[in-house]
Image (cartoon, rainbow, N blue to C red; front, top):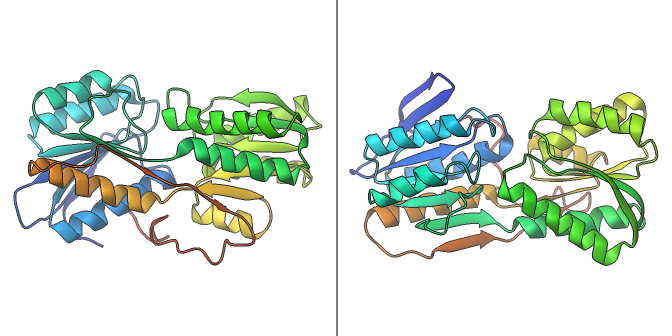
Length: 315
């Protein structure tokens, strides 16, 4: 896709830069590259960098649990004297001090997707995560007839996006589904394997579950694998995000719906803001991209160009 001047894997950190026409260099720090969300986000960042001729230095922490790695990577970006930094937080609270250090040095910081929990950010680009949970609740509630038992895989602790999605789901269920009971909730790593083992346990403990909320599509894949292995085709599953796997799950009915965000568009907008800030230009401080609901009725008609990266893209 781009003219990548450098790309290498160094101790769990992918670092690459895109040759640009002028001096601005923007650092990009994300939790990891094992999830379709951050891959699509970086696709948007790189696409905008190609348009503007911006040089990128991209680092990833190797997973949501590696906040200390991300802190060290942001410190390294400061030492490189990048013109701006885009940050998707591995832990929204833990990285606040290093983000504020960068800001104190005069380096603009743009929050990207998973925001550092500080009001000092130069700008922030995110999705309406609460609304993503709300849309899931409406969809899953309707699928089970607004009655029965639901379990929630709410995503990793310490991630604001996960908390907001879960809150949107729970509050909408409470407001609309007085006969819907949430019997279990787990905060676990955003991974297929973690979701699979958790779902296997829940099937033993809560055999009469009617529906499962999944914070992400990757976790939903693990849930679906567990359900298929146990022959439970009666349990409805909802998710968020829209990887190629999730698209297929919606088509074949294993996902009743998924609430999605324009992830590529967020990445592009964050890079644009970072470049403007690096040039000393004023920008809008916050930008929230509306959520959308995908089900079997519209899965094949939606324009995905601003939603997910092409299936063959690799950062």
